[in-house]
View (spheres, rainbow, N blue to C red):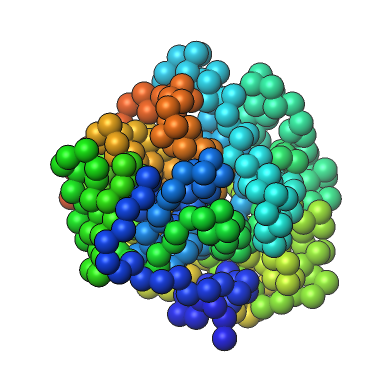
Amino acid sequence: MPSYAGMPTWYAASANPAPQRPVLQGAHRATVCVIGAGFTGLSVALELAERGIDTIVLESERVGWGASGRNGGQLINGYSRGLDVLEARHGPAVARELGKVALEGAAIIRERVGKYGIACDLVDGGLGVALTAKQMRGLEEEAKVWAAHGHKTIAVLDREGLRAHVQSDRYVGGILDPLRGHFHPLNYLLGEAAAFEALGGRLFEHSQVLRVDEAGPRPRVTTAQGEVVAETLVVCGNAYLGKTMPRLSGQIMPVSSQIVTTEPLGDLAAQLLPSDACVEDANYILDYFRRTADGRLLYGGGIVYGGQDPASVEAKIRPGLVKTFPQLKDVKLDFAWSGTFAMTLSRMPQIGRLSPNVYYSHGDSGHGVTTTQLLGRLLAEAIGGQHARFDVFGNLPHLPFPGGQRLRAPLSTLGSLWYTLRDRLGV
């Protein structure tokens, strides 16, 4: 039986063997307690363990149960907003600092895969593709912006050049970034968790945090059967934090995205995506896809503001799949699932402190695969007394959603409809 039986994803069905971690019981002490065993939580926990810092991680379900173990598995460098947009918002000095670290998240993934021998099907190379001439101009400009920040390996491809990577008539061109890539995110997380424990870290599953007491010099975290008292607390619950800490959950909006995987396609998978690069299009509500190690096509897209799952994931995703690859119109879909990520109003991650010894990070807004690895390292640096890089993100403004929690989803939906209409009209 798969080690993640009950999690309805291809990732769970193909997960590496993993132990059931214990439930937190009784009273524990640690130097650092981390809430959440997803990308951010395990990234910071592993960084701390490598520094010899006694760390406990609490997970309400299992390692990677949330969006970290359900996403498209694409390593996309940068942020949900381009460096040119960030320069216009925050000035050239801030944009330069953000640009310096924009490639570090993907580098951390590659570093850990090699260092700890993590079997997660890591493949280098990724594409951004355009459906219209306007989108193509935008991708060309994106390549120039990256080059201005020192990343000069992005290649611009016309329609014919793109066909060496994507056998679809839907796109007019694209950009190829060798520093993008794709992997099996759940297996990566399981590898990180094993490395963390091998270094002495303690990880507890099925240990939902019910209460956090920030009063006094040491935060106290309470679960149904136990508690942890730590010198420092790091909150990495993201969209799955719930109402545990209202000061944080009110800053973000849960958003669901949907993914399907086909039945194994045999040689057809390699024919459709000859170079095995992952792909995302340039629409506002974008589609993304890639090959899997067992010869399937994994295809995702569509979002639902507020985090609700659609009535049918297949009905939401199959039309885009068929538009991209008409030869798959009758293909069987073996898996279909949703995952929920956290979005901020600025579309930039929020990282900061609620008090001198309570840190948090959330809201990667759809670019969490690589950004979380970077932010985990910055959190560990800050806990160790090095705040310079942490403060680059911590000083970015954290903007509330207009209308508060009640209106954030409908207002965002209205905005997305406008941008979706512009995508369709090509304006």
